[in-house]
Image 1 (cartoon, rainbow, N blue to C red):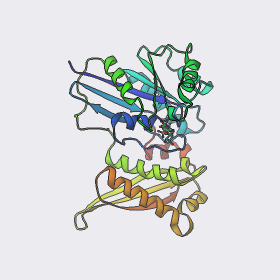
Image 2: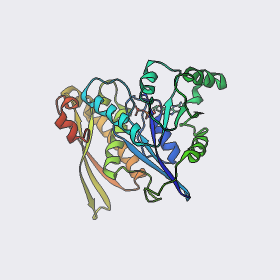
Image 3: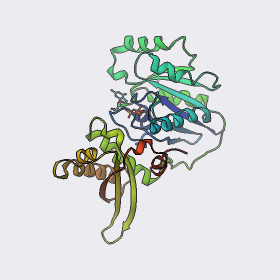
Image 4: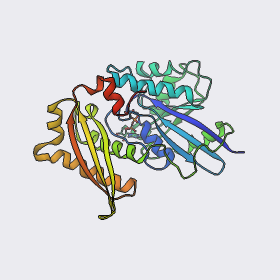
Length: 294
Ligand SMILES: Nc1nc2c(ncn2[C@@H]2O[C@H](COP(=O)(O)OP(=O)(O)OP(=O)(O)O)[C@@H](O)[C@H]2O)c(=O)[nH]1
């Protein structure tokens, strides 16, 4: 019998959902960063074996957002809850109002929901883990509790073993060699955004959108020429992103190129442009153009 199913990974921003997805799949399919709200789109990672297939849906962190971009992001997370067979709810601390807000969406969902307590490497042994789990008891009847460290790959196999048991009978939805539904173009723009998140501060990380404008297979030089556009909201942000004498953007470009070369196993030459598009996060037409929304 072949089993398969869709599994949503939900939780607050920055709890380690993307790191968990990569740990479950065994390779990087989602970008990660120390900044909250790294994930903006819904990303699918596929784990295949002879007798099962798990399709994980990494969702953007759920929280009460203010601008149109945040509202669009929340919609993605909430709608994926309805479409899946099981849910991994990732937390990294004791329950607060922010977690209650997410749990409120679980009520009425008739499907297994598992609580994943991530970042146990940062906790003070079992006592810390117990305290966190205790704070969630009584709020929702979770089907299982998994203390893990996605970063150190601790107990990740326990999640997999349990999920296999709960998987319904089903077909192979994807070819076994496929690990993600992200196109190469999307992966490139996300890896560039990941480097911006790492190397910029304050409002800049969230004010950018990255668009891959052209990809040209340059046979003569044995490389792929990629032209990327980084959109920011204000001229001051453009200045900061470019940096003194272009230092900052050069560094971001070099790091992004190295990672793209490695992950996509392609030699690329990357050209980056920075453009100001005032208040793009609140303009429906811009959100659509940059890949968000319906
Ligand atoms: N110590 C520790 N840090 C972790 C662990 N898992 C993730 N992190 C860190 O937590 C931060 C956020 O990780 P992400 O995987 O981007 O978190 P996310 O929940 O996908 O974040 P959003 O996209 O903002 O919703 C990064 O700095 C990770 O390195 C873990 O098991 N232990």
